[in-house]
Image 1: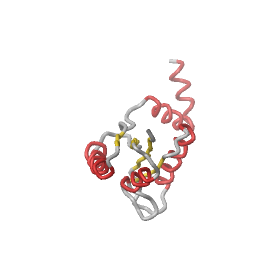
Image 2: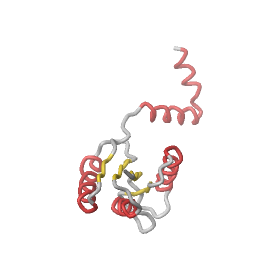
Image 3: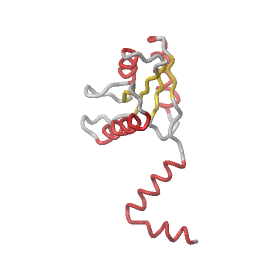
Length: 135
């Protein structure tokens, strides 16, 4: 069964914004890591130059996807994760008659902690971590 992937971000209201570019970069990294051919990005806060979830699903279905996994790049299980995204997925599932599932939010994952710790070290606080490791 052909599976499509949607990397879903919140999006920024600004037309040109690093926040939007980061999601596109993450999607390309996912494509490179998985080899996924049926992969789209989408934004909850779309603008003319980027698509929303409905547009991403439509493109994947048109390309033959029979199952779609929506991967929201959200840290917390807030209103978008609990209400907005599930409601939109239910609507799209009904419209296209394909299986659509969402992954869990990113959450407090130890892998994210590693990135945060790395960033703190990059900010010049590596001596703090050396000291903590020796305690």
